[in-house]
Image (cartoon, rainbow, N blue to C red):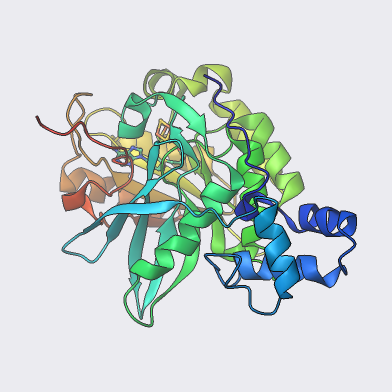
Length: 352
Ligand code: SAH
Ligand code: SF4
C-alpha cells in the first residue's frame, strides 16, 4: 500500500482557497463564494453544506448533488488525565487511527499536539510511535481537522492558542501534507493562527528543514537527543544520513525571524545521554545560536529497555546548561497516566 493517501477531491476539508476558486469559476459562480465556503469550513468549522447559510440554496444544492461534503475526522475515545490533559483518538475514513492531545497551559489556554502520520518510519529507539512503523501520511484536511474537532472537547470558554506538530509521525517526512495544513491553519481567512504560535518538530530531515524555512516561517523544534554521533546513530537511525554537524549547519542557516528562538528538544535517557559531559557537549553544539533547550525526561513504555533519568541527573544537566547562559526548560510531564505524554502516542494492542 502506498504511504501517500489519495486526496478525496470532493471533501471540502481537502480543498484550498485556490481549488474552490477554480471550481466556482468553472461553475460560473462569483469569486467571493469561494472565500465564503472556505471560511465556513476552516474558520467556522461547519459540519455540513446545509449549515452554510449565506450561500444561495441553489449553490448548496449543486454542491451536494455533485457529491461534495464536509468530511470531518471522527473523535473516538477521549481520555482525561488527572492533570486535565486530554487525549483524543481520531478515527480516519479508512479505519486508521491517530491521536491528538490537548495540553492545559493555564488561564483557559491550551496547546494542541497534532499528528501528521499514521505511525512513523524513523524508528527512533526511545519512541513508542516509532515501534509502529509507518502506515501512511495524513492528508492536509486530516491534520487541520484535528484542530476543528477538538474544539468540542475543550472546557467551556477555553481555547487552543498554540499548535505543535509533535504528535504521531515525522511532520517533515509528510512535507506536502503538513504544508497544506499550515496554509489553512495560518491563513487569516482559515483558522487564523499566527506563525508565531505554530511549531513544527523534526527528528532532523535536513533538506526538508531547508525547504520549510523557504516556505513558511513557523517555529522549528529539533529533536537532538544526543550530544555525539555515536549515541545519536544508535538511538536515532536518521542520524546516519544527516549527522549532527550537517544538522547544526542547517539549523544555523534556518531563516528564523528576529527575536525568535528555535527549540532544541533533548530526551534524557538514564545512563545513555544524560551525563555532565553530554551537557557540556550540548552547550558547545548550540553555542551562539538563538535556542531554547527543552529537556524531556524519558516517558517510559515497555520494550526498549531505557530508564527515566534520576532527578538529580536532570538537575545537574540543567544546571550545566544554565551556567553557560542557555535558556533551558524541563518539560513537565503531562498526561503520563493516559499514555498521552511525548513519544507515547499510538494505539496499544488491547488485552484480550
Ligand atoms: N517526529 C517529530 C515529532 C514527534 S515526536 C520529532 O521527532 O521531533 C515529539 C517529541 O517527543 C520529540 O522531541 C521526541 O524526541 C520526543 N519523544 C519521543 N519519544 C519519547 C519518549 N518516550 N519520552 C519522551 N520524549 C519522547
Ligand atoms: Fe518518529 Fe519523532 Fe518518534 Fe522519531 S521521535 S520515531 S521521528 S515520531
